[in-house]
Structure formats: structure tokens, C-alpha cells
Amino acid sequence: MTLLAEPHAPTGTRRLLAAPGPSWSQHLATFGPLPSGVDLAAAIESAGLAGRGGAGFPSARKLRGVAARGRGVVVGNGVEGEPLSGKDRRLLLAAPHLVLDGLLLAAAAVRAREAYLVTARSDVARHLREQVARRRDRVRIEVVEVADRFVAGEESALVNALNGRLGVPSDRSVRVYERGVGRRPTLVHNVETLAHMALLARYGPAWFRSVGTDDEAGTFLATVTGAVASPRVLEVPFGAPLDRLLEQAGGPAHYPQAVLVGGYHGAWVPGHLVGSTRMTRSSLVTHGASVGAGVVAVLGRDRCGLVESAGVAQYLANQVAGQCGPCVNGLPRMADALTRLARRERTPALVDEIDRMRRLVVGRGACAHPDGTARFVASTMHVFASEVAVHLGGVCGVAAAR
Image (tube, rainbow, N blue to C red; front, side, top):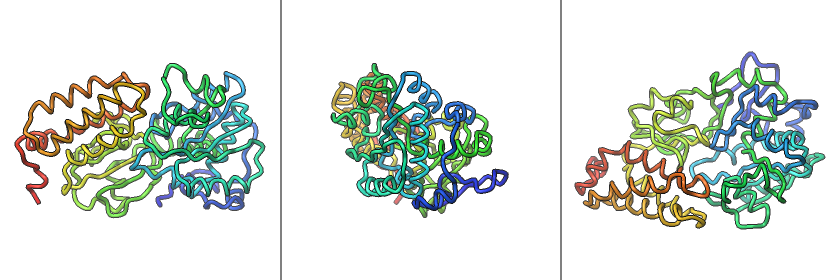
């Protein structure tokens, strides 16, 4: 793993993947006990820490929103429903006590008596229960395993699962910070965010900002996968060049056709623009992308972008919660049209059908799933526009080049 350490930081300062491992005693020897008297919300705000689960919402605002409503509940989100992501699993297995420390700090900040750590993987759940049992924390921490589905990590879906209901998203009219687990105000943070909190409370905002950019401070965990020599999870600072991430994973197997940034709800960066793209909001927005949950997936020149994207769209259409029209009707029709195009059906009307369905679903779902899927499909049609024209002629450019 790439372990980043700031040379001017205090002695013993570490970042997420430089933790000593899952041992509780080693964790204490390296980091010491949790500090007391920290104004967590103020520290987070000063550091500029934003959520690492994908949405990038300001963490201090979420915390204060729950704290203002009285005694709340804290949930650590390690579900990682994104199929291409492995960062949360890597973190929970390698540095579980940083996550647990962050969970306790958040619980203290909102005066919670109970906290939940949620995962969709049985091996991770077993590991976490073992680590929790080695600690003597004042707040009860319960490790919960939920169904492994794409939408299971959405915060209202988590709350529904913890309340004993089906783990699917709820209508956005009632936010979980207002009424969540047990109808109490609920703070949901991604496990990477919690781990950052544990270090931030110890070393302070200035240390946190010692890497990254002025607008996006700190590091994030990136899952680099696809056509690279050594797929892996890396810890990198915001602002890192995209091509540097690929180099750290052994470089592309060959010059990339495109790179999907942000996962299945992300967007494609064309291969010829990888060298000029950085992992920042301002750089990625030109491609309609964001760092999101840190997924960086490389599409090699031996794979058809339309075929691969159609497979993703079909997967997303099958992962709907089944609660609203845009998901139940719109996403399958959009995925079907894209699949027919990928299969080289000579029907020019398919392009208009994809665009029509994409526009119809945006902003109309009970959760962000339709919007994210539409964003991915729009990026596909733009980045692979030349291949769209070739497919409508009954040929696949990638297959023809083999």
C-alpha cells in the first residue's frame, strides 16, 4: 500500500493506511487513547473534512444537525454497495480501531448512548465483532450485517434496516438527522470519514490540511482497478494527478481508452485527457465526474466502452428499490436501449430513446439512484460518441481492431 506521511507532522503521526494493523494493543501503543475535551465539530469544520462515502457532504454540518436535536444515534457506514470499490473493506480489516475511535468521538459529540457499525460482508462483520470485544468502550457498539445491494449503503436504507424494515431508501422528505434509528436523530458517516476524525482529533486541523489542496484537504482512499497491472487500494492526497494513481497501481496494461471515476454513479474521463486531470472537484467537474467513493476503473483499448457501459446500466437497473416510477420503469428502458445499441442494432432512434429516458428519470426518484445512473449513461454517450456511430452501422470499432 502507499502510506502517506507528512514529514513536518508531529512524531508518530500516521494516516489511515499507515495504522499498525488490527491489534488493539498496537493501536494504543501507536496512537494512544482518545483525546478528551475536543470540540469535534469545530475541528472538522476547520479541517474542511467532507464525507468520504461518495456525496462529499460537509461532515461538521451533519454532526451539528444531529447534535442540535438532542440525544442521537451514530451509524458507521461500511456497506460499500459499489461493486468496484474495496476501500471500506480494506480499511475495516487493516485499521478497525481508527474507525471505532471515530465512531466513539461522533457518539460523544451527539450524546449518543449507542452506535452501530454496518457492513454487508460476513468476514468483515466477524472481524469487527472480535475487535469490539477487545475494547472497553462506554458506548455500546453493535456490528450489524445487512444485505449486499447497491442501494443498501444509502443512509435512509441503513436506517430502515436497523429499524427492522427492508433496507431500501426512504422518501427524502424526512431526513435521518431528524428522525432515524428508533425515530431518534441519527448521524450516518462513512467509515473512512470516521477514521479521519480519529486522527484529526489527535493531530489537529493544521496537520490534516498539510496535504491535499486549499479547497479539498487531506487524503482519500482510492480503489484503482480494471486494466492496470496491480489493482489495489491507495491512500492519496486530493489534487493527485489521475495518471499518477494509475502508475501507483502498476500503470495501465496499455494506453487507457477511458477511466471511470467515481464508480457506477460516476463518469468517464477520456484516455487522452487522463494526463491533464487531477483528483479534485474543479478538475473532474469538466467531465461530469467527482472523486465520489474513490473508484478509479481503467478501460483498456481491448474492451468496447458501449458494451461495458451497457452491462453497468443493466446492473443498476436491476438494483432498484422498486418504490418509484423512474427506477421501476425508466432505468430498465434506458438500460435496454443502451444494450441494443451495444449489440449493434441499426436503429438510430435508440440514441433519442436513451436521451429521453435519461431526462425523464433525473430528479424524480425517492433517492439519488436514478440521477446517478442517468449521469453515468450520459457520460457514456458523450465519451463514446464515435463508437455510437460505428455501432449504428452494425460494426464494433474495438472488435474490428482486434
